[in-house]
Amino acid sequence: MSSLFPALTNPPPSGPPSDHVALRFGDRSLTYAELAGAAGSLAGRLPGDGGRVAVWATPALETAVAVVAALEAGVPVVPLNPKSGEKELGHILSDSAPALLLTAPGNELPAAVRDLPRVDVDVRATGGRLPDRGPDRVPVGDEDPALVVYTSGTTGPPKGAVIPRRAVAATLDALADAWGWTGEDVLVHGLPLFHVHGLVLGILGPLRRGGSVRHLGRFSAEGVARELNSGATMLFGVPTMYHRLAETLPDDPGLAKALGRARLLVSGSAALPVHDHERITDATGQRVIERYGMTETLMNTSVRADGEPRAGTVGLPLPGVELRLVEEDGTPLTSYDGESVGEIQVRGPNLFTGYLNRPDATAGAFTADGWFRTGDMAVRDGDGYIRIVGRKATDLIKSGGYKIGAGEIENALLEHPGVREAAVTGEPDADLGERIVAWIVPQDQQSPPSEGELADHVAMRLAPHKRPRVVRYLDVLPRNDMGKIMKRALPS
Image (cartoon, rainbow, N blue to C red; front, side, top):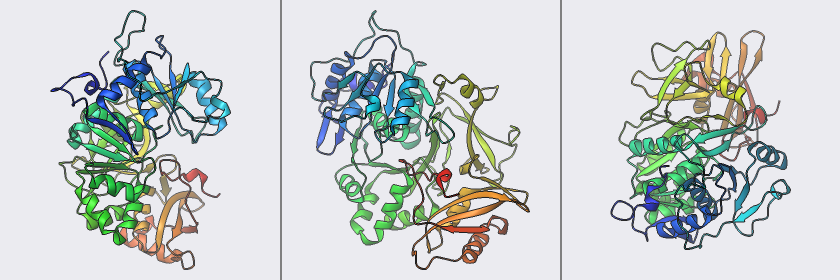
């Protein structure tokens, strides 16, 4: 079994110095030597029969140590969202059947997980050694599971995507190529650790490179500025976080200076509005890089650190990833003009192996020749850059004979000075097939922009057939833990 974290076991000069800080959460930190000791001590307590372990994925050192220990021992990890309700937790535990639960000492756990054998993670344990694969442990290879990450369950109970070790390594190495990511980099983020973005990219990524990660615990502009001013080189965030930074920048020159020091600002998990791109670049001189991935595929594309800045795109396919756009009948688009909309399909070493206990769902997710159907709609420029326009199920609107992506309309609406937040959906229309509906959170609730004003604003920037026919005003848009707008939760 090849290690996912060679920096933990390689002594200098091939690995980082043993006193190099690997992880920092607030005022608690672990060097590479301390992480190896704590993870090695815990690894010896994990099942060796191929069973899974659950991790209570709070934003804490214990979560990182637990995941590293399990992965180095060849034991698949099921990260649990501490905010999940009892019903969802019950489903995940019943489906994944973990042998035990790893958690920080003192955590109070809900009833749904209390029947699991509990192992408290001691981040200061010493004397442990990352295990060799002895005769009493099941052999583990690159195709074996590393993680079982549960999808959001918007169309039914959450499904467990089985992510092999091969996919973790391939994605992190491809991102290192695209971003020039090295052991010299120090990453700062405040993302949750039960999902691909915060856990795989945000924790496992720096550890695979031999670098450092500083987790904020809770995201704040002050925390970002503090860490970037004290040596951090990279920032990972979701659009909600970058929007808050953009809103803060005009009144905080210190934040602008700190962001300007970063080597790389990366946004993911949803599209970053072009307006926020522009505000951040204007204030800091920095461009935010976007990348595109999902639970089942890890990362598919990214703007390269040494590539052309192009706001509103998610860049080019990563090394090793094949990507195509297809028509509704599955026919691949034969030319890319930046306007024709198709569903993204991908294949490559970054893909999951299937949904746990769901062979039907796994079979339906792939074409006969091995392409994964992402359900995301996009256009592709002639030079290969990808621009996501929305989800097939909720963001592709067929109106008046046109196929329209909700994302580009949302971007246009956000450029209006009277719009704070925007979401776009389609609803049945006897004449058009579907009419475009805009859900708006105004900057000023007492004086919102009118329906006609917003329709004209979009028509002038895009095309008349893309203007909203209906505008509905809200105090706030429903979002999930990753900041994505939950369109299915909009009022009916």
